[in-house]
Length: 544
Image (cartoon, rainbow, N blue to C red):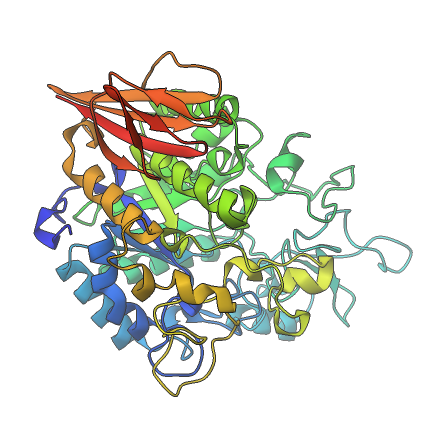
């Protein structure tokens, strides 16, 4: 167990460079009041679990006032807590307790769009075409003889047109759901508003921000057509950007926003930071979001997208490390999040998927930089694929038939019956039902159980904090020669050498010469002076 006193002190401005950040999907983490939905008090009650797991910071998904059309990513008040999750006093108590345990708090910021229930948007609807109120959003007249056609050919990421027409004839832009109108970030009131929102939460002690759709706030002048079918169902943003820069993503002017935000972050003590959820046409353009005058980090999703092969992982890792050297900022490593299928399922589901997920976790945690874990991955949770359609709440589901709900099912804490300790005894069932198979995956079932995924994560995170060769100041990744389908690299600090080996070859491999095992994703078999590493397994070895 890693105590709070063993952590990087809260006064360290560079904590984020090697932090392990745990993403809390607020509505699915812990329910304190029995209504079936997670809340801030639930997080507060479970903070000791996160401390003992060994993470450094929590990233909270939106908990602001919202109609909850898109699980809180449709914000109607950026300076308050939605009653579904508690109130500002609950937030203050939670962050106070988190800091006392050595945990930092990163909050989601949603600047590309507001809720259609936001006072600004309701005022815009009431004021009518040409009004100052509408200038804070992206309203436009339609095409066609009577304006009956959308202003351009843009399509929503959630499927269907990105424009909705009002009774007065004008259209408004929403790159996501119609309940999420896009803001006009060329308007000075919009920029001033969000600078004030940053200060509001920084004053309450938050340690950082995750910027939602960080590449999307500026749209090309004149709102030009894309010129191709931009949002084919299921098509990811990275694939779209491969066709060329889109007129609503990654425009050069977006960097002006972050150059204005960085001095605000730097004016607060303790290393306040921001990480971008950004997609760009090339790695070079993505790197532009990072720097001493813009943001501290940008998510690198290529690691998440790597296929289960040594060549794929090696290429992704080499590219990410090279880019991090250029920008002078650490790489971020991610295997799962609230928008993507859980990696146990992506890697094959069932026993094989879990084996690979455990090995991938050790690979990721041995790499330099910061790591973002998604809640429940430390339990080996798979994607829930058989949710009843009537219970799905992802707004994309109604438009495309695709749903992110399967990775958002509340995590199991204890007990033999759903919702597995998610809420107080006698409370409502969780807002999405957990499968019966999850009783064996609960925190209680895995705690203290040798070989469990939870204990693997605890051991790996403990070693990551304690081993000098895994520290932020340790040496770089040095690849070692291996047989086909095997990845091996070491990192050094003074006389300590830690080697990570991953077997993706399809057959057991013998490992020798790297020292004693520190952590392994599965049991190793001793053989002569070395060990046999099974298929789809990883291990760390230490030599001093």
